[in-house]
Image 1 (tube, rainbow over the protein chains, first blue to last red):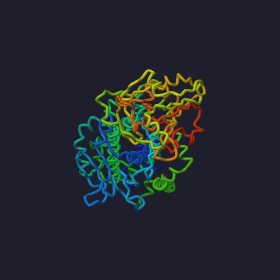
Image 2 (cartoon, chains in turn orange, red; image 1 turned 120 degrees about the vertical axis):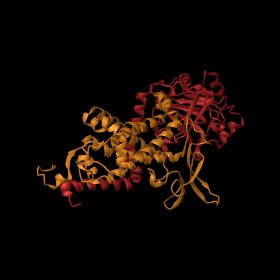
Image 3 (tube, rainbow over the protein chains, first blue to last red; image 1 turned 90 degrees about the vertical axis):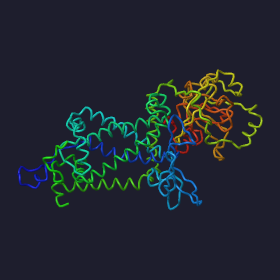
Length: 286
Length: 261
């Protein structure tokens, strides 16, 4: 690969210097993980559709769900899709509860474009879900171990003392859509990746396992940690949508903070630091 | 885009990466549903079922118990699912005379085949447990079950060493169709201390909606395993001759044989 020349007047120098940011494991994990999470989300919505209500506690209080996505007849007699949550009823016709599938209005919680497979097919949704989970969970475990063991990864992901102190300033900086392109992640980035890697992703696996009757017998503490099987199912759903939120924010930030630089760093590993969008002297900004 | 050469000096590699990305995205969009219907892919997905079983057997011991709850956790009504009122003449006759001449047939790979009445089963040591029923759809319901421990019943008929599975043949034509429900569990689940042939629900007789006169409770498995309206136990060494050959009504319709998750 090319590296910037020694010529101080070259354009490469003005644009900043290329560094090796992501190792091969990180890059492979990132893209395999993306594929797994997309399959897990869409097959998960297929599974949810089989019983589109959520509850809190050990079992299902059928007449008082915490959240329900269903279809009812409106005042005018026409069917409408609704979401019931905390006493509220939200009209979601067309997307949630009632949506079009092959041109026909269909009663289903999540629409066919969001589920895997598209038609209502619980058995196949479960197969996709567990097949992807068997790739996702062992890789996550390996990647977390790598992140803890490798000094480079540890340095890349754990905020420095100055970064912890500078967090409010970093947040304000981001809110003004200013991004630095330093060799190091900033404090906010590190904190976000820490929360996702060591928080949300393992919680997805654990709340998923808590829904398994055999795992409840093997590891009964799972039920105590998450407050019962139905609570675990609700948390699994909430954490999944927290990951969707992370994905959206991540995608937007990747797009607006130098999409080609960001993409290249996750494909070839090389990342340009100190480029035009942020002053070079500010690139260690905490 | 002017400086693309500078950033990625190898245009071939760049095209390859872009091409792979586009290929992956379009395959993902159009291919998943047809993949779902592909036989070889389904076989591969089926392998994860065996992987899950092996892993769950590894972390759970033979005796690890499903959680038992207290009286106040019992749901107001135990939700009935699948068949709730079998309409075939044979079953209706049993209901009409209160299951007086109903017998549980146990045969197959056993040394002493038997026909047991409900009273025979009630005469055996009973076990009562308040447990959670988990449906494959996602809901759960807690109820109190009373019955004979399946392991005790099996000891009575003495399975041969070739016996690997217990197949449950049921009285109900599921969804009014031509097929009567059937299910199977292996000997590990069959001899689990909480695996019952239940005849009582919430201190009462097992109602018709929940599988009268006898249903299976296999507390570490999902609900579809727990056959209702049980008429016959057959001990077998393989499912090859049982209907579609996958070991159960839902298994023959694409669901996993291992229902531990």
